[in-house]
Length: 207
Image (cartoon, rainbow, N blue to C red; front, side, top):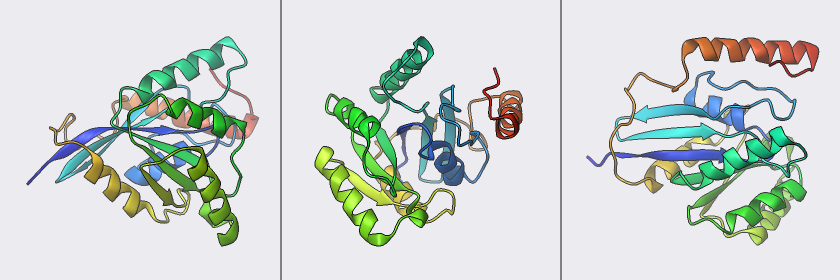
């Protein structure tokens, strides 16, 4: 049996549901979730292992035009990631038309050779005619390798995305043990979950 493996970056503007999607794909809490932008500050590697494949997802900080040094550093880290992975999943909000941040990212994609998948998230919040219209606009901005419509929060339509990712990866070895779901230590995950709770209560960023 062919075994496939590789790295997949979850890319998008802040607050489009990248961390929620990552948690849903793995069925485990590996990334904190908040409606406060830039909650994800570290590149978290999450590992999905199946008999036929191992997918290493990288949850990148939300990318936008930087307004300060920390923002610039986070954007540069994300761009470096773009060139180091096998596939990029561009996460957008299905219920919103492409904004300046989305257009900024699709312009960056023009310089890449990696396949980019369009993932329209939050379809549970979007009427079908709006979903169709927004999907068409995104496809005009960039020639995506594949397109998916799902709800990360509700776990809708995740299987087609996982299947296509696995089929698109090259043959390769297992990079991590079968029972490993993230390269972050348990202590880090525990600290991040605590930070998530505090952010939710205080609405402020915790160092």
